[in-house]
Length: 305
Image (cartoon, rainbow, N blue to C red; front, side, top):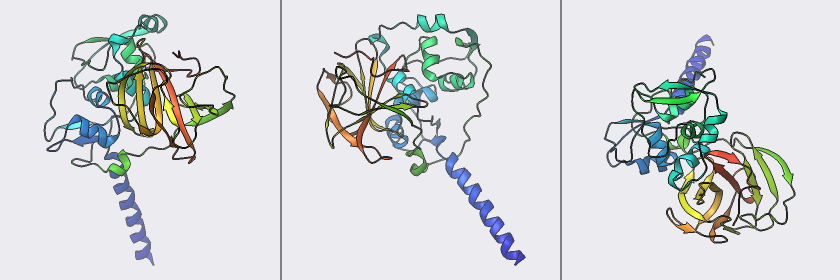
């Protein structure tokens, strides 16, 4: 009887040790032959600019077999900030600097934009805006940067592990972190990507709205601009970013299909794709968010054509 009890204890202990290693496996990735930043980003359902920013890689850097890469947590606001073309934006970062109390930070070896922003309790988008950085920026040791003048938040570094192939079942799924607010009556004069939707506010880390839709209903562009990203993004399904000429990013997520590709210039009322099915509610809908300088703004108040 005692032996059986101890066997159970050993089994449970080994199970949790294995589970811990399994869950930590998606924090780092060891580059294999044939890998590219694009293929790795698709594996983990994040964007290439996020992967570069997390590892302080320039657009011209080439990854090598055996190299260890940090895999950042999926953050659609960071993805939107990094996807934007700063040259197209007319919104000024000066207003952010003026309203944020800052102090100076000197870059040390091993720092990345991600690690600095997290350590000091900032979002990546805030950190980038404060320092006038974009998706091609690479920081250097000794460089002076601005950070929010708040008490530093200690964030543990990712646990290294999972060398070689990481398990895709943990790396490609994410819990539903959305918190649903009230369902609001849509203003009849407000243009949405689908017709006559029920508009439900989505709260939490990233705000936005969920729009009800008919099965396979066309999803149309509400503000012309350039398609900056098309792909499956972890926790959001098929995602499409469109950047307007003023630098605002319109984010259409949970699409069933996509009709455009990165680099396309899309115009008002052009079909971008079709509505998908929410994996949690099983209802036909899309989620819609709008970002300015990587910060969410009220989708109902975002400019339309």
